[in-house]
Length: 158
Image 1 (tube, rainbow, N blue to C red):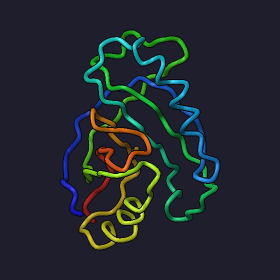
Image 2: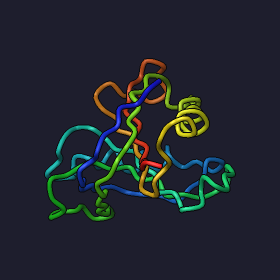
Image 3: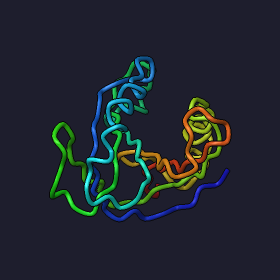
């Protein structure tokens, strides 16, 4: 599976976040709190949802399933003028990304094993220290093998 390489322009997001690890995954809890409140967010760019991860700089060098990171459930907005109570703004900086068009269940982690164990080591890129995210568009269906999403991995030339 070959990604497309894209230069992302800055994006403004509004959402909620939780600290978690792979072994103490709280993604369901996060989306359970956020999803019912999406309609409160004004100036949405689209109906797409963003699942975003902010990893500490050493996360992948010293990987363990118990390592903590911050996961966001968010929506892209035109402006950060009006943020609903209990939600936070996040500005996603511009940069280069490898974008994988993925079809399959969100519970199948083999795509990430491929990206980090095969594609990146064989490419002319390395991970960049910026957020990773998935765009959950109209064809996304949680835990469904026919689900579709875009996986955005921050990269830079070696």
